[in-house]
Amino acid sequence: MSVNEAPAAPQISVIIPAYGEVDSVRHTLAALARQDLDPECFEVIVCDNNPRPVYAAALNLGPGQQVVHESTPGSYAARNAGVAAARGDLLAFTDADCRPAKSWLRALLTGFGQQASVDILGGPVVLTDIATTKPATLYEAAFAFDQNHSIGTLHYSVTANMAARRRVFAAVGGFDSTLKSGGDLEWGRRAWRAGFVIDYCPAARVFHPARQTVAQLASKRRRIQGGLNQMSRRWRTPWQHLVWIVLPEFQLRSCLRLIARPALKGLSRSGALQVSAIALWLAIVTWLERVRLQVGGDAIR
Image (tube, rainbow, N blue to C red):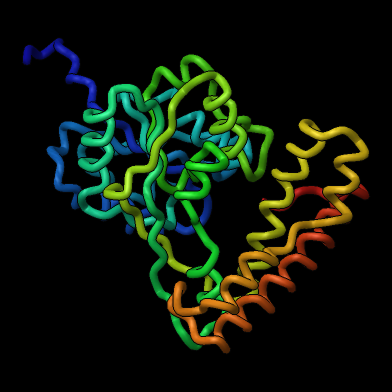
């Protein structure tokens, strides 16, 4: 390569929105540095979403790693900044609290290579730190990150573990940066309606720590309701939106199946009952948050 020749574009760009803890981002970058893929095949873009830049000075960036800053609040605005800076034809997304398996990127490249008609891939988000003595972690193990359901039934992948061809973003646009939560659902459904194909890639794994307390589960549930409330107002009539507020879903069927056959989730009968009690409590949290948003409360981040 001559002095004036630009380096070849990587095959895949990894985009990580980040806000808050620096150490968590360091661990994610370390996991990406251990990928069993030629480092020249991929780049890593940390999207600093703090009001003022934090990560560029705090991280010891290696080759193929960079930080872009996006001051507009919200992880979807940050992801859009990463998409704009990316050079790869494939765009892979994970989060700052995720640890990709060392074969993650190779599995995604293989998946796209073997399925030319597939435009979007999502892989499993494997929970870690599951403690049988903590009901909150048992709830996470039973219900969190069901990518098979999200991809096969709802036609989207969570951005903790998703990859897409650049042409999808060129056709349907970026994530909705006005959403505080649920932007992966909104973008995925938009791409699916435009005719793009999404599939599940079981070999492309990332690891995510389970939430350890019921308070953490409730905080996550309240955060998610902000994005769902925005989308409900857009997609439903005023009466349908009111019904959505008043009658939040309770995982009744899932809980009954869990109590009837707890071993399917590796639970005891007692554990299944504890998980179901948490599900009921989270339904109440959901209702209270939807009412708060309806009367003018701001969505939490």
